[in-house]
Length: 114
Image (cartoon, rainbow, N blue to C red):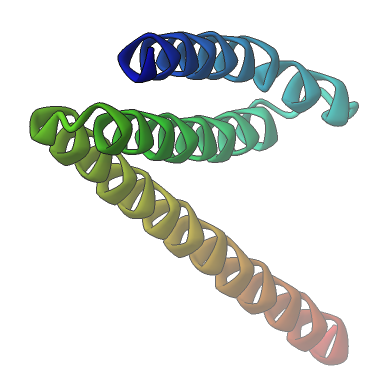
């Protein structure tokens, strides 16, 4: 009886993960109204990272419920991969912010001299 419940619960988790990864990219498309490819790519990468994180958590939880150490490890690995993806996106965002500030400062200096 308990094994049947665990199997049913793991199946529900898999369906939830599939639904999450299928529906999550849609808001990224709706948010970008300026048709900026860069903004869309960045949003998509962040959504992909979040989906990978959730997928890893679900896989790890399913592995814990079933006692499958392999699934637990794979789930944790996906969470680490998602963390690396997020770190990369944060670095890109920081570099863009610094570049914008430098450009704004250069414009200000050029206006003052001109």
